[in-house]
Each structure stands twice: as C-alpha cells, then as structure tokens.
Image (cartoon, rainbow, N blue to C red; front, side, top):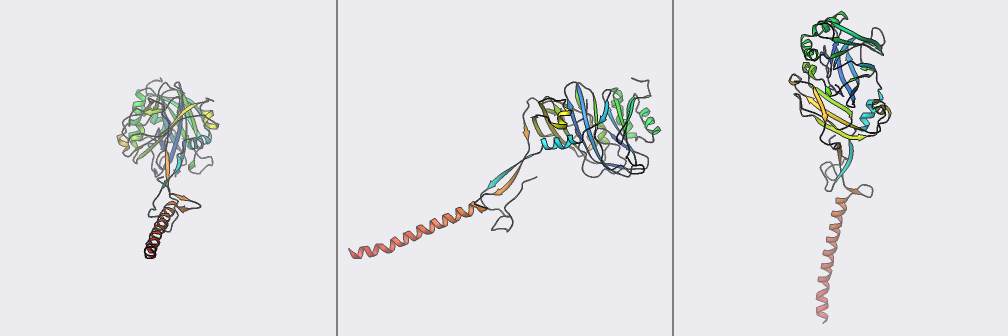
Length: 353
C-alpha cells in the first residue's frame, strides 16, 4: 500500500533533508543534500502495488540514505526513465483557441503588437533484520525489518548516517503497524564526486490490498511541499481526504491504451485508467496521516484545457471587427450619398412639371 508520484517543490531544499515526500532523505554527517524534484508513478491492480520513482538532487553530499516505509516485503530493481516522459505526454493539457471580436489593449490600433495571445498557462524487539541487499546502479539497496525506531537509527549510524529526533518519532506509527523499510544508500558512480542531477529511477513492488501513500514523514519538512500522483489502476482514483493540505486536484483522468514503458509497468493490459493528482501543503506540520486512495464513484474523464485568446481575423490576418466597421461605414456613406442625390433631383423634376 503506497506511493504514486511526488513532485517535491521545484525550489530549494538544501539542508540536512529529513523529510522527502513519501520517505526520508538523510545525508552523511556534515553534508547537505537537496531534492529539487521527486517523481513517482504507481500501478495498483488490487493485489500488488508497483512504484517507480526518480530523484533530482543537488548539494554537497558524497552519499546519502533514503528510507521509505512499506507495508510488506518489497522487491527493488532499477526502473525505466522513459516512463515519466510517456506519462507527461499522456496527461498534457489540450490547447484551444478562443476568439474575441473587439480589439483589446494589445491589439491594433491600441498597440502595435501581434494579436497572438496565450491564456494562463517480525524480528525480536529492538533488532533490525536485513532481508536483502544489492547494488543497483548508483544505489546500495537494503530491505529492512525493525520493531524499534531507535534500532533503525542505530543501524543507520553504523553505516555512517544519523536520524534526527523528529524522524525517529515520525517512524514510530509505521513500527507500530509492523511495516518494513526500504533503505537506499545513494552514491555517485565516480569516487569523490557529489550527488547531483537526475538519478536512475527505482522500481519498488509489494503485495497490497489497499492503495496508501505514506505522507507522515513529510510533516518534518521546513518548506512547503507539493505532491503529484500518477495512479494507474482499474478505475479513477481519489484521496479520501486532504490530510492537512489544500484540497487535492485531479489534473487528468481517463482510460488509456498503454504503450512502451507504461505498458511494461501495467503488465500488458490493453486498457487501464490513469489519474493524475496534484496537492500542495503550505504548512507541512499540519499533515496528520497517510493518503488512502479509493475508486471514485464514476470514471468521469477529465483533461485540463488551456485557452489561447486570439483576435478574430480572416484573409491573412485582417481583423473581422475592422472589416465589419469598414463595411458599416461604407454602407452608411453610400446611403447618405443616395439620399442626397435624390433630394437634389426632386426640385428639378417639380419645376419641369
């Protein structure tokens, strides 16, 4: 039960980063790491959940640890980076022209600019069990069990990292629910270099009868958080509540025919429903739980439409309003001339009689 896609703010997070959306990022002692963006996509078929996530990081850390709680035994492998480009294309907004008749401030004769305008864009107590460990690209991945947050902290310290008091407390609800952890050590390929740029995506899968996105650790963040979820499931999915943030917003919903990396993630299903959800958390300390996503009452499709306001023109850019006004003036002038001519001819006709 967990994870979809998280867009962690595009701004700064340079500091010892103890909160990172769905997990916790812990740098080495006396070093700093910032997560410019975390992007995740989830596939859930009612029995198994698969998450592909990708980090874009910067900072002075030569290595760091990322910890994610999971409700059961997880398998971890490298993911396909093309997945995110494909999902972005599938959910991109439509662009439509919206024409107006009368000129506006940016149009001639009020301004000399173009009329082309765009709209708004269970181990023993206290122990940590290592159920698996492997090297995947730049990642040293350990799958752990623990019944005590302090024991998990001790394990990390033994590997050169340390937990904050707040993070230790934040992990306690997951320990009480007997969740497990995926602990990932990030290290650059070249010795002596620092972590930076876009890291290879990770693919995590585990058994799940519910779709839960763990957000509790994000309450430790010191800056506003931004959440984005790509959910691939049988139906349109929606969060049960706002868990302390602004109301979640569906930015795309619709049935798709998967291809490429998306088809690989969905297991070759010919049809799947894709829901994209955005949510912001201006005050992360108000986050009071994890997201649980359930099927919506109806599979109502939705796609954002961006309108481009354009002046109505014909014939290579001639404004219709100009032709209309000119036509009215010509007609009025013609009528006035006709009346004037008739008035001049009438007296002559009378005198002749």
